[in-house]
Length: 118
Length: 112
Image (cartoon, rainbow over all chains, first blue to last red; front, side, top):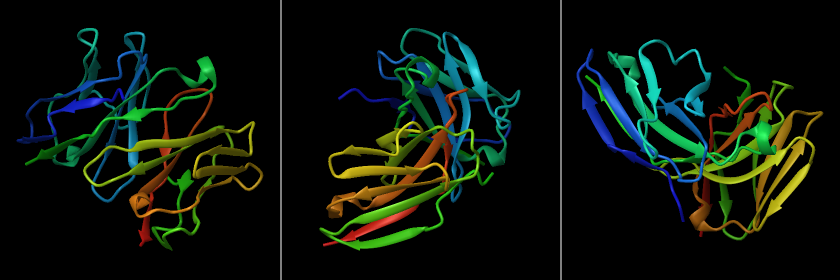
């Protein structure tokens, strides 16, 4: 069964350093997302990406964050200058369609990257 | 942000019985709802969804009920199995976008 994959599974970095989290969405999916879950808190939406541009973003997704689809398979999240509060599980997700296209929006999640900022 | 709430942090059920997980929402603009299951150290796994034009959707042992007037949805698992033990999240979105807003989760424990 096709699945979303993410690398690395765990990333440790020093505060102020740049990190890039990588994801390979399901191959025929057109919509891509990043979410995060800080320990003990809810899963929070960061950004959605469609047709090579950001379609939605949350207040969390400030200028320190960026996303890119550098080739036909990878989808990346970059944090330019990490802060302690960026420590969280970061989940990538993808969906075949958006809710406006088909009326459904079943998003499939990867296993996550645990980011630890020291 | 309390737009989607799961008021029971945990639920314990005997194998073979029904599990009922509840979710409430406050934003009347939400019109599409999903349930996810999550095991430790894994990402959320999609279970079942429902559009606001329906009040029930069934898939095998899983049924989701939506009460729009009460802004309430529930997930029924019948019969419950030990492998169903996990954290269950409800999530909601609006037709204007694809962002999912998650509840805080309910930990389900199914005892053999």
